[in-house]
Structure formats: structure tokens, C-alpha cells
Length: 528
Image (cartoon, rainbow, N blue to C red; front, top):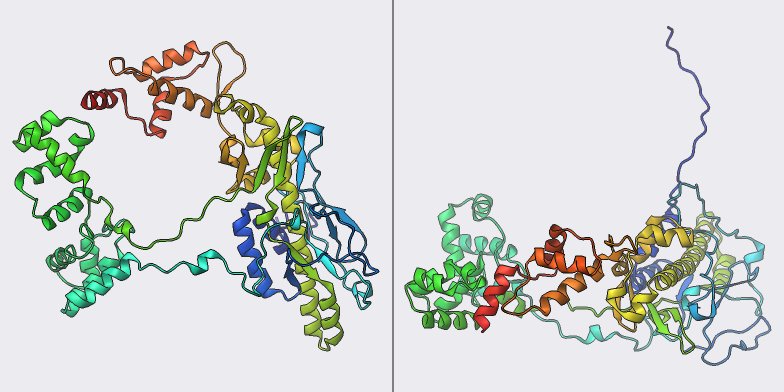
């Protein structure tokens, strides 16, 4: 056998993930708030992109007339960058009128089927040279649908309320200020700096003392001594390594830490289990003293660090609204108020293109135009894909919207993907970090995908969420003298037509943070 180099021709398929396609897929995973932040970043990098001001009048046709859009009607058209025509973009679907799920535009975001996909960047030539006054100046994103939302423009006095919130001092800054005042020794101050970095937002020390000693190069005893000094800082209880230590620090501050209380804190698990009789024996006090101790620790702060500044909690902003139609059925509508409304300023493109002399300047302008057009197309495609998935979700879970959680159907990603003819991974991206506002409340899209629990009669399966609701209802209605065990709950559910195992009941009960039957019985007795 002779080894020699040779040339072979092979044919195969592979998925080409271009940067533009990666951008489109990333946009699909964003919720509206994240999308707005991303678009604002693109606005800073691309001079051809602009945010539409909702208060500005919409430009009409090429003869300079204002558009004949009726007042209050959503803008549902997108002017293409090459001026070839309009593409209708829908922002809502009326299920009561038999409307079909909106079809996807070109440049699909569903790429998990293995097809090779290359985005076709628009040609930049004479047809794009908009020098006439009456030419179609702007290429608008379909994300402007139902344009009533606020603008993200940086001009004027358009500031968010979060910019007016006074900055609160953080726990770490508060501790560093005390460290600079109360600790004079340089080594102890260095140890304190490292220990502060290991304090979490609740005020607990989460690091290892031995590692700190090795890092600083000093004995463990010195780190322990520094820690003891830091535990006297404000707020009381900070730098604790456990809940008993946190409570003990606060009790020492109040001069209420005696041997009985120390034993009490060492056996807090007995308090959680309501075993007060055994706890009184261990502490060497009577039941009245135990009750006094319980009320005393209830006045303490188990998480002292939370009293200081942290990140502002952002409210949940729904991405899709589901409203009942007066004539019956449901109206599924994108939350266009929180969608960024982007346009490509073709007049500015023509202006700077005519002044560009160097080849690298022309290449930069072409690249920015292609990038802007692709972003506009990706935003349109994202809105269309989300609407398709949300529409089918509402169609599948109609019984839940009408009758409540007990009627939530078992559903998985494939059930939706098969109907809208997309891959499961695309449906997963669409439903990630997005919320649906329904008459029954605001729910994550992932909430509507639940596992199936078989029926004992062989009929339609039940969703896991509806089974959790049944378990919660049975436990809420149990009598203090007849606490339901997991086996008893299984028997009752089987009587309702559910084929469920005891371990599944226990798993669902623990996920809902419902104590076991033994703990619930102790709680009921202590409350009697």
C-alpha cells in the first residue's frame, strides 16, 4: 500500500451561522425591555438608524401629502429599503373571527432544521440613491406596530424615572466606611477589606477563613480576631456565618444572650418543627420561657444586609396581551408600547454616500446600511414569530383562560412547533423570558408548558400544574384532626380520575413548600 497525497471532492450539508443570523436569533430570545437596551446600543454604533418619535407626524406618500392613516389606527406597513413595495406586518390576531396564524416573512429565524441560510444583503447602487425630495426617505421597522409607546430618543427631556431615583449606599460601602474609622492596624484593615468582599447582600459571610488567612499571609487566629471586631459593625448581625450566629450577635448587642438562649439558638430546628416541649427540656426552662424566647427572636432581623441599597426591582412588562373579544374568543396583541420602533434614514445615507471619496468610507457606509436593514428585518421577523407562537398558545390553552388553572392542558414545545411549522428550539427561544398578560393575570410563556399526568380511566391527561392546584386545595381544606398524608392524597386524587404516584405527590408538595403531614399536624396543634 502506497501512501500519497490526493484531492477528493465531497458533498455535504452544514448550517452556516452568519453574524446577521446570530443577531436575529439573539433578538428572538430578548424580552421587550432587553430588546430596547440592545437597540439603543445599535443606535450608538450605526448613524443610519433612528428611533421613531411617536409624537412626530408620520410621513405620507412620495408627493409630500400626509398619509391617510385614520386617527388611532396602528401603522402596519414597512417601507422596504430598496423602495420596491410594502410588506404588511400584523401586530394582533383575532381568534374569534377565524383568523389564521400569521405566516412568517422571508429571512426566517427558524434555523434548527439544518438548512443552510445566507441572508441576502440589499444591493447598494443607483436604485438606493435617494436624492429626490419626493423619494421614500425612511425604511421603518414593523416593530412600530400600534405606535403609542414612549420614545427612547435621547433628545429633549425624555428621561426615565429611574434616572431620578436617589442612589442608596450599598452594604459594602457602609462597611468600608466603618472599617476606615474603627480599624487602625494596616493588617487588620487588609483582612477587613477581604472579608467585606465575601459578605453577600443579606449580610452573611460566605467565604472561608482559612483561604483569607492564606491569601493575606497571616495566622487564622488573627483573621478570627478581625472577624470578631467586624461583627460589631452596623447593622447588628452582619458578618455572621449562620443564622444562629446572626441572631446571637444581635442578642449580644441587646444584652440578652445568656446560656439558655445560646442553647436555644443551637436547637433552632426544634423551633421549626414546633417541638417546644423537648426544646424546654434541653434549655432547662419552662414552656412560658420558651414562648418568650420565640417572640424575642421574632423581633430580630435574620437578614440585616437587606436594609441597604440594592438593585431596583423592575416590574414585569408583558410582551403579549390576550384580551376577550366582545363577540367571543380572544384577541392576541403584541405590546407595541414597549417595542423599540426603528427606522433607516435613507436621506442621510444618500447625503453621506455622495460625499464619501475613499473606498474604505464607501465600504463603511455600505456595511452600516446592510446592518441597519438587517436589524429592521430582524425586528419585523421577531414580532411576527412571537405573535405566531402566542396565538397558538392561546388557542391550545383556551380552557385555562375561560375556566382557570384546573383546566390547564398538558403541553410541550413540539405541540406548538408542529402547528406553526417551526423547530422546537425556535419555540423555546420565543417563550424564554417573555410574559403573557391575560384576564387571569400575567404569566411567563413557559408556564403554559406542563407535563402530563395520566388519567385512571384512560381519558384525557391532566397537566402537572392542575394537579398541583388539586393537591394545594386538598391540603388547604384538611381538618386539624384529619391531616392528610401523601398516601391519602394519592387515594383522593385517584378518586378524581388521576393516576399519580406517591413520590410525585411528595415532589409537588415540596415544590410548593408545603410541610409534610407530621409537621402540619404539629403546626395545627401549636396554633390551637
